[in-house]
Length: 314
Length: 326
Image 1 (spheres, rainbow over the protein chains, first blue to last red):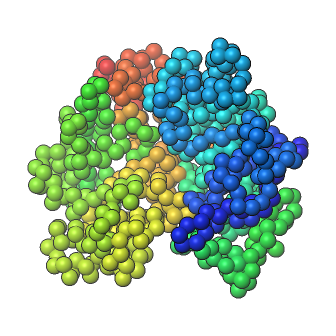
Image 2: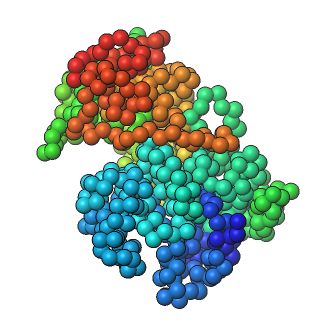
Image 3: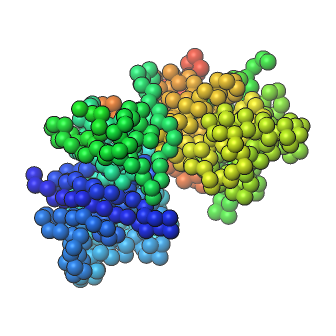
């Protein structure tokens, strides 16, 4: 499969009074058509910003974003408008991402209206079909968001994202706000839709078990950088970067008698305004060497598409 | 001391709203020995927090009413105490850790003063003594004592939660109720805080009720588990009993809908349907509309509790007869 999305040297700085927040700092990756790239990391690592940059909800400071070989980052307004049909987003919070004054039917049908698809009646039929596809009963057409629980609201967000039959969807923590039993329903729905509609996902999440479940490849971010990226299973069976290892060890697992290595990081994430020199993880790294605070380790291939940015890993 | 430290029996709590009566807690019973940790697990609206607030005497009233039950703590029924007597217990013998450290700390008071406040109020310490003790408590949660005079906004999320833990432990209470204490934290910080709670619990031999929706967290810190659904404890037992041999269909469902990080390919099987409307709970077993093993009896009769060596299940699959018609 060819690459649907290719990101090259993507950078986003947010200027603040104290300097620049290095939210995304020289990130490159590609997503193949029909696959899911999971982007994991903790608060403030730049994963959501990356997702938003990809569909140009915010403008990149520099870098290229290629969609089927065309550069989105430099596209003009008209081209971008047309490309939006192809690229959609599902947000984390199903409460704040729906207009409280629009009925469910209106919300899902809005993109169709904006792009002038069909007559009003035809659009209503399309909305009905979309609602059925995401498991929403048609009687909810005239309901408002406040009348729905979180799981159903998230289905509305999904239906809206699907309305223009996109090829690429950024899923920004789509299940984090949901209870576990509902979370599983939505994850299964996203996987079914991916198969039937040949969708490509960028799946942004802080939850490693969820990311592992849904992704073909995973990229781990720390302070605006990708520190490791690899095929999904490989990342778990052969974790190379010390940050990825710590992240993995920190996941509480609901099982008895787990043989687990205690690998607890000290301290917190440093400020993204003044990120540490060299390797950004060196201030918390248990393997720190002299070179780590001086030189930034490049993200290099260790074979089989397993990339890692660490001086220690040979 | 004989018997358990905490014994909750037949606790029923309702909230009277203009839309109707919400049955938040329905006949909850459990006990906790000194020094042990109970995980209270369930999804939003299961009644976990209301159960905790009932123990603390903090159910907001109105609209909350504790309609029946008893909460025996160290030999006293807390539900029969006056507000004045409860004040001597709260923060002194039982303390609480809330989910969001930013809203449970006062932003305009230094963290040190917030910790020493409890010591002055409950332990008759002078302010100088309390300050010394508060600094010790900060050190216990791995925060340098000289940060006593700093304000909450000067700390990171994980450190703030450690300040709250220091406050909760300051008077060396017999019981701590922690309501989703790590839910707002990142995983690596969560791991630090859980590790700290585990070691302090040992050191102070404090009993703890850990309220969480995360079975992983339960596995990390708890030795007993109670699973709540629609205001009832549907299954309870030791960690080994629940994690090794879950019996209630809801508990089994909860385990199956979490992706398994240790397996190569994980299948998740969601629990169908939605949490019931607390204004209009289903008849019979509250889980029956979502239960894959629902039988006729489940629709009409509330199942009784079957006890197998301390492993209690409220399900018709395992017991004879029902407790009451609903």
